[in-house]
Length: 119
Image 1 (cartoon, rainbow, N blue to C red):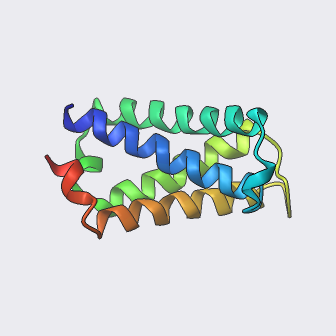
Image 2 (image 1 turned 90 degrees about the horizontal axis):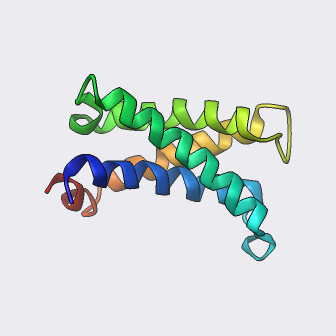
């Protein structure tokens, strides 16, 4: 598996997990197929944006801070346009989801998991 494919899977999974967590507010027993579909949609939008940007620049693959910033921005936009919030103001869930996805990205970047993506 090449590096871009691994990073695409990474972007999808961290966005998906963050979206699922905040959509059900941490109550994983409440997850339905509808939640999975919405989280997959948010993950797919972010991954598509990632693939498009990487056609022009490899900065996202080279710098963990650019990647986290991209994930934050793309997740916020994708979550905001994909579904209404489940708590707070109209942007609150999107903001929390984006922050969660960016934190997951930084966690991966600063731990042993990063070695898997650098191969």
